[in-house]
Image 1 (cartoon, helix red, strand yellow):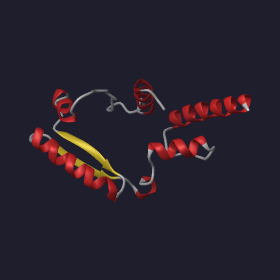
Image 2 (cartoon, rainbow, N blue to C red; image 1 turned 30 degrees about the horizontal axis):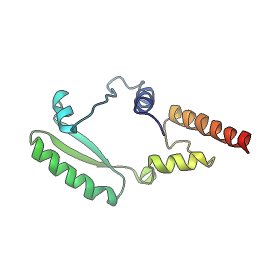
Image 3 (cartoon, rainbow, N blue to C red; image 1 turned 45 degrees about the vertical axis):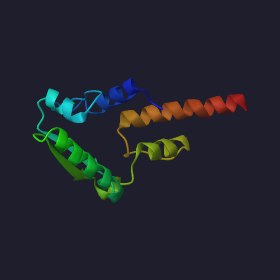
Length: 125
């Protein structure tokens, strides 16, 4: 739906006001990127119990690959535990309110993109 570059740009714009945050792109293993950045901790988010099993396995693999790097998992707040990119896209595509579920710059881009698709469908009908 969005290109890799689109996602990086949106993330950078969303955190531009945070002086101690930067958005970086990489390919390959996360632990290799963490080493390249001289990071000692990888922080992962858990939305629901269903995320736990995957993150648990991933943390153990990362520890196997890079025992010097800790993995910390943080639980999201209950008000955001249901949010996923696919759910946001679906709600936005159907004209639902996504205010507060994504950064304002992302909401504007989604609205623009879906408004254009609705207009295209109306013209072709």
